[in-house]
Length: 463
Image 1: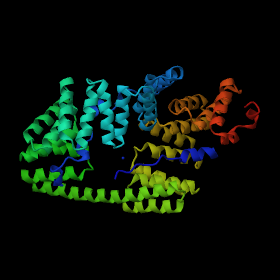
Image 2: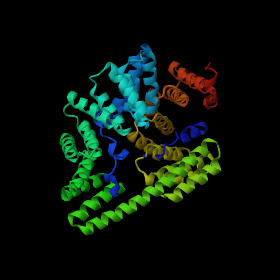
Image 3: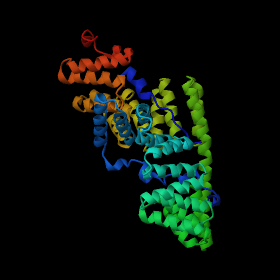
Image 4: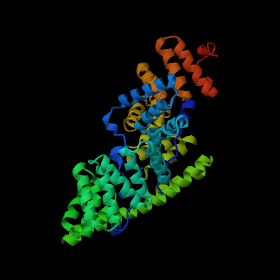
């Protein structure tokens, strides 16, 4: 089971105080994943962080004056572009409530649902989108992927062929057809489809993996080995890919290379098993934490770490529990270990930044962690809030104001962001301006407990 992490609340808490040979047999989720992403996934690299946030702010401003299905759809799309699918889904739902036949909203909602793993529900949404927009190639492609995942190969082939009628250059459609060909034993057709997909898209690892498997079935071991070397270089953690490469090398006469790959496959397989055990323990710990059973949760997270010492999530989750127990040095140590295990985790950067800010009072180091978090997850409202507070603590009020406004562009009902923005504006301008007063009142209105954070000299002016 893939571990679905709970939303961490470390920073909000602190604020109240200042991801074999058997691979030849069946289509697995890993083989299917990604084939349709040429149309489905927003490529974040196409726009920088400022452009994405600007697009979201503009969409929210339009929504303020026009609460239409189209306006809600625009906000949802902007949020999904920032990687915030859960928040985006709320706006797609609002758009569909206003216009149940909106093909665009149905399609966008389908993308979010497909990411959650509910492929049947996603397929229904894509079908509804196509009912009114039958020429939407991206929806046919998405529906083809969902049908392939659920085992409806005939239906998937129909959809993918329809994609090619609409867009003859769809690498994803050729990849999907290749997967179906393999499953149905049509190896020559599979080779052709995978090859076309690779010709259309450079570095198409999933299609290279599929082509390698087809070539192995044709006993073209040298060609398969060359492809699998590229695949294993791109994905170093797949025991199945290592095993496949070992098989190709063995049949090519490279017994030493094969032995090395089989050993690597065994090593990776053992790691995968230990990670599965760790994920189970960690999920149990999350359940216990939600129930407030912090000691039991900490024990479960420690079992997960014993199962798989490099499991980033367990270190991070243990750090959060320790923080909640006010064991601050131990929590900081776990966050630092989590970051060493996964230097790219936005959540860990945010939590480590919070610990550095509120326990170590190391403002500069905290700011660095929050910026690193936002570099990989530019739609993380909580990290913008924390960055704003850290910049304010440094006295960089103009930068703090920008960070807090970004937090509110993403999450306009963040009480803490409204309140902190009000405080920053008051200090920056040397007076409680109308805007500062309004922001303080919005924050307190959303969470009356925040009144205690307002300096006495401002309280009298508030409602």
